[in-house]
Image (cartoon, rainbow, N blue to C red; front, side, top):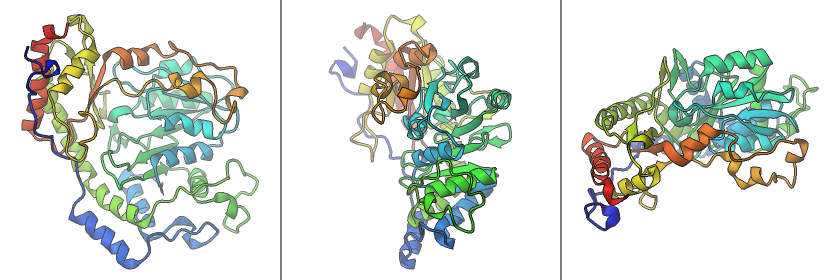
Length: 430
């Protein structure tokens, strides 16, 4: 016996380095805000501070300039940003929004919040994003929008998505939480739809703890997002409101970002490009080492795009072994240590991603706000709805976070050795 999963010594016991991009610059930014005494200046009524304080406004200007968009609106999370985006495009009870099932739950629950019906389209086998070919078959007279998620840092096929949206008069919301600084041609990921949403959650490329940014080039959509962010119903009769007849989804929330979060985000934004380029370099190094393992296939990157690797996906090649992916990955994980600052988390290597959303109880039982809004549709959700997604999740997809910028080549070499060791000794697992 040689494998750690069978009780032998791990290949590596020293924890992997922490991914921590916070340093003196963020500390100084936080102190600047603390010393000002203004941790937030939002007012939930018509006033110049309806739009937030100086740090919030500066972040929004800098984000808009960086990503070359007309409007950037800060929020307290990307989830809040998705909720605001769905509200801004006017989704009403019974409207359908087509979304990928392979995404964080908020991409779909944002639809449910407004009484909309999530309709799940399958994903691309090679790129893992929503498949335009699957979308076409799902469009009905009730379809109002597409929620496109740039999964793992890979940009969706927006050339096809835009054509579909134009043909059927649909809005596109782009969930770019995992893909800041991704590109399709010369355009930034997150700016490719009608509304884009970025995440500043603690385990994203850059972060302020919790936070998000919504971007759009549409003046009216931007204004509606700002209303939804900050108790918009309180200002509908204010002088500054442009169209009192349009009251759709103007029941507002408190989705406001604090001045401290904004100050940290401004510093983090300046680091984004270099942090992304480090991820790309680490992936290239890993793929050079892993590509010859018979049990692995390296997924492609979409033509004319820049993948930014929120995680690094791999595919298990079932043709070359009778061993199931899960057993193989469990053995690789047993050879590797935890990561500093995430010691209580499992080894940062997984099979699959999230279970396809339509298999969750909320969709299987068609229960949300009681029976609402599922009582507005005859649509049912069942296993087999998205076969490509299910095959990826249950059989072939592997994902890991070892390409983070804190990882050095010597750390990556240990990851490679763990894969090689398990493959060489796979007979112990069969």
